[in-house]
Length: 190
Image (tube, rainbow, N blue to C red; front, side, top):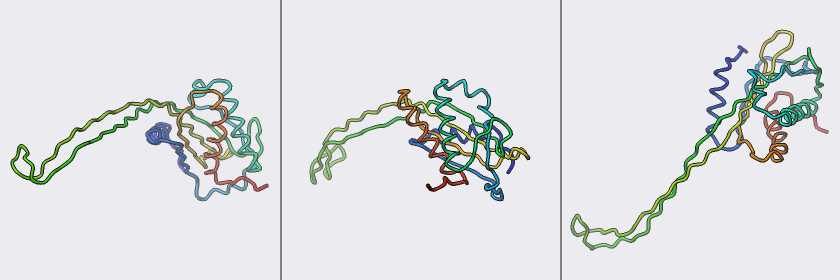
């Protein structure tokens, strides 16, 4: 699988940022034998995107990924694992607009209108709209074969960012789990 250009990844992330809820996509090497990968190491956050996270958020994120890899019988090593995992974060603001329109009225056959005798309509219509700004986060996970340097998997997850830090601590593992459910190595049943 060819190495994916970062701008293409960001464009895909922005595309999914326009949708509501959690969106997860993945791409993998079709001929890759994932059973040979037993260890992994983190390459870190790409393009200094870790600066967008607090120290707690980084810890929660790494802990969630480690838990998911452990479920897949894969062990973390500081460097030189069978797989190298890089993470990339994109933050964006999404503006959504919702509208409401109501019509109250009646019609009567045979009444007069400005166009002459025929169907007549009488009533009123009201409408309103609201704008809402939502901050979205997109995490892009690239997995490489450590020996060949070839990219073997990519997962992208986009969702709204919780404002309350306590809620973020609870939601990060759930979101990482949703991303890792697309990983080719499934969690071991226990």
